[in-house]
Length: 258
Image (cartoon, rainbow, N blue to C red):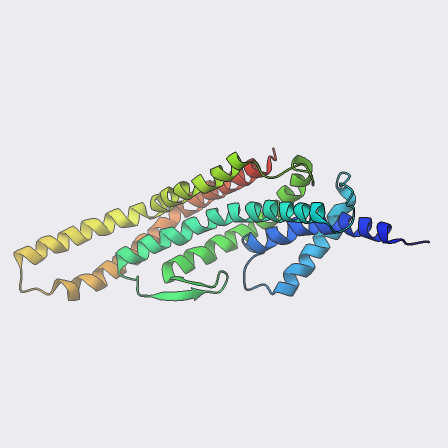
């Protein structure tokens, strides 16, 4: 067999361009983009998925050397992968933001801890919700569904077909308002109940000024908030399913996957 520089470049491009999309996706997507997963492991996983996926992909565009056109294709695939991964991160951040609302109302805003998956500091309630959602996501094979949708995106958005439309990117930006609304919906029962308790303590403070409301109210608010979180688990699964459906719906909309 004879190997030429053109043949090697063409063979490398057949795998390198899909690898750019997959690598960017695994950098931004939940589970795969977690800092708990080493960078080498993510790279090896992206290489393995690329090797398995490329033989079933439609014909890829021919690349002539490593020029400006090749660089634009790499940037294009990287942007598509990053947008796809980030769209699912929005659904995961709903529970983090909802946990922040609950923790601040309970008086646990000071009880923060480092989130090892994202490398940021969040409240302990948010960390608990995030671990629960991650467990449900993995048990429900959500990570496999992510890979399936990304594989289908090579047919709906073939390599070299163009950039992600600007209107779809604006839809991704507008999802931020949905994230705040969904987080408020998740935390609303606890917030409403604790607001009524705080109003009661305010009335007690006015009727009995000699009573130290802060000393009495803080432990009661904390214990009541924990009970409300516990009772809220009866509807948590339904809320989780709704948030994930919205997240996967956004992902399919951005990648034009039916």
